[in-house]
Amino acid sequence: MVLCLVLGFAAAGAARQPPKGGPDLSQDPHIKEFLQKRFHIENQKEIALGAPTPSPFPGLWTRTLTVTTPRGAVKTYLYTDASGQKVIIGEYLDLRSDPWGRIDMSKLRLSDRASQGPDDAPVTVVEFADFECPFCARAFEQIESIVNNRYKGKVRLIYKNFPLQMHPWARPAAIAAECIRRQNPADFWEFAQILYTSQASIDVNNLRSRVDNYAKANKLDTKALDDCMMGKSADAVIIQDQADGTIAHVQSTPTFLINGIPVIGLPEEKSFDFVIQSQLKDAQASAKSGG
Image 1 (cartoon, one colour):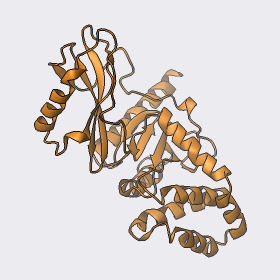
Image 2 (cartoon, helix red, strand yellow):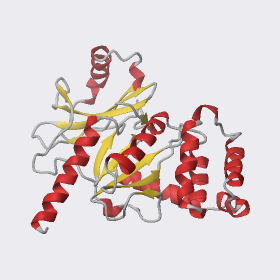
Image 3 (cartoon, one colour):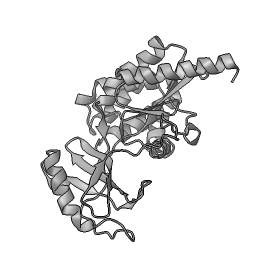
Image 4 (tube, one colour):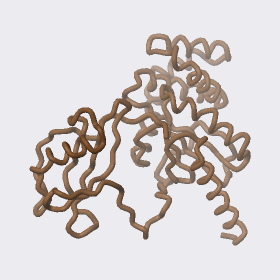
């Protein structure tokens, strides 16, 4: 799986007290040393343990485990007994819950966003992406092919901006793309393609000239574009998208929601087709039953 990761899930070394009856936190150095050796982590400072909270299992406590890597931070969960001598690393699954882990998309702002495919498509794919993310660039053509070729007429794509702090020109690029979309929705996708294919040669100093060149070549209103980029309304859209990403627990780009089902990584992966085909079958079954 390839993706761009959000940096800084947790801070290491913070002093904290366990809840009453919680695990012995004096074991933290031993836990970190053990994990460092078991998983070949170069620097123990890259390991951060969150505060303990009661787990769904009697006698066990839950803690976040965050490992910072050169590509970003990876977060999982650690379950420990009160002694802190025995731990389980993994994810707690409640088999009574929705196995898809579906996100309630009614809580997200999906209107007035860049989109492709019919509004009444049985499958809606929401993509959270960053223009400076190399894996988003790889995903871009793949997801467009899914919408316009492989599942033509059956999938709607909605693009949500999720620029990462680690990428210096991703946010101004997102603002520019939003301002271009407001003048001509179809131009958003062409401009996005240019950004993704030119990532290696774009920086904070030449981004604006590329925006201006695109606007002139496509006969956009350059004054209106400049006013939009210098104003606050386009940035407010980016802020809203990022807030929606938080609601959807987005931690990396690209992240996709397929009818609310989170799928992280590239559309070329088999899991992507599996989820889409499952949703299409469900929609077909529902239509037959009149549901």
